[in-house]
Length: 172
Image (cartoon, rainbow, N blue to C red; front, side, top):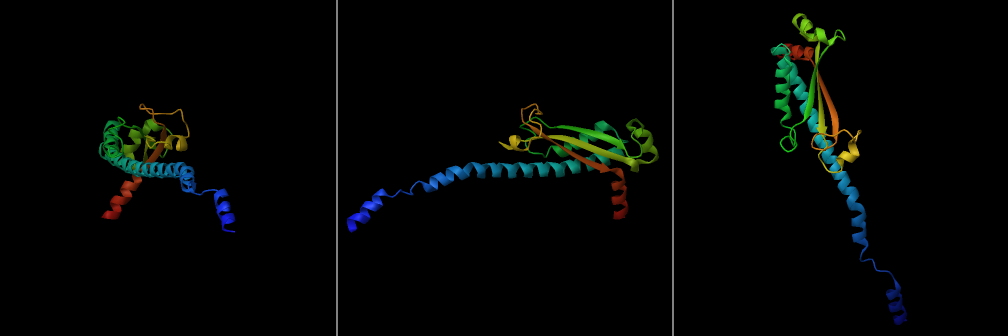
């Protein structure tokens, strides 16, 4: 009887490689999840900084008579805090000054002199997806890339000048 049990143990399969196999199967999924979470966190941080940059551009525009060069400098000072600014050579961003009263943006300066509350500042940023694999996961347009070759995602933030007036009135 004992020899029959020993013979059966010799025929049964060994489970010694089971943990290695499970690790090999689960590791790519786990690494993809970690990189996706990291890239989502970086995009969220960039969106918060971009919103603050739009606020700063609106405030600078209000003080400097909506001079786009001064407003771009203000936005650039905020966006320096984004990760990889020194490694990737800067980010591509754009500022628009929109008139909320009419669609004609050429009359912005005339409107600001009369009623600056009707102005909206819009800041667009092409944020590079710098985490490995994230470009393939999140990029809507795989052909749109920065100078360095990373795919980008477009982020937008806007700020109404009337919000500045409301915050000044509330603080007094």
